Image (cartoon, rainbow, N blue to C red; front, side, top):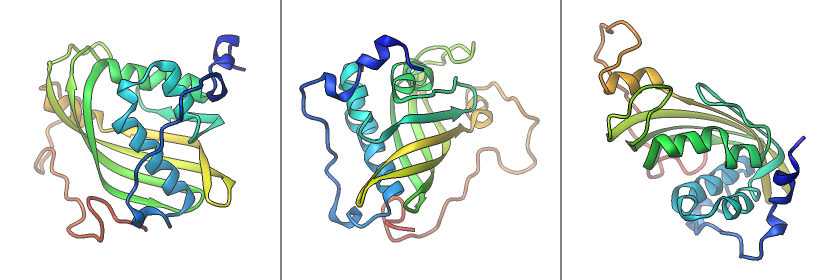
Length: 204
């Protein structure tokens, strides 16, 4: 169960209007899980870095269910929107990488599940898992898997997210390889050659 301080930090506690993404009309007919991820990601990329912790929590609760479970590799798991937003991976990642931008290469979804593979470019500013920060921009790959729950005929909330960063490639890029040298070109990734959206398909 959440601590009393966490229980108080809900959307109802704040009078400011909740943030809504401005999406192109082509996305209006997307399946519910895919639409929920798109809106959640838009907030994280466009607004979250400028919000107070309380305002950020109030906003992400639009898209994260009260029983939201977040699991990942390397960072702590979170068991509620409060746990994810005010600590855990979100806090540790933004401390280590204080500026970042992501682009989706593939984005698939239905009404109750979604998955993405993306790449990020981030400034590595603070130590991560005891590895000193190189204090430079770094490229890395990320894969996410989601499940969602319908909350209305046209909306839903995420109940589960598993996120995996390609740490082996991330550390290789800063001169700290954790795997033997590969016989094929290191870091090579061949994404889709063509699709019907930019940069990821509109609906798959």
